[in-house]
Length: 52
Image (tube, helix red, strand yellow):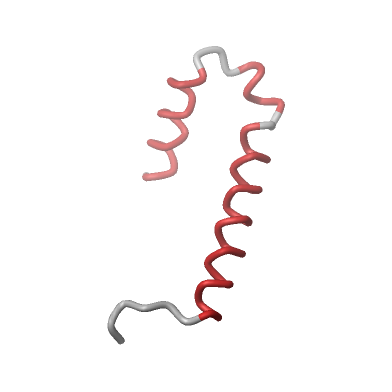
């Protein structure tokens, strides 16, 4: 394979990107963010917790 994508792979990529966007939007709309205070610090702490 020379790095080219098939039509099937391209279609799957579109679907996966859409699902990722929907998940991210759902996370960002969660009511918890209204109580988080410093959103940047909260995102940083969540990312750190997810890595451990």
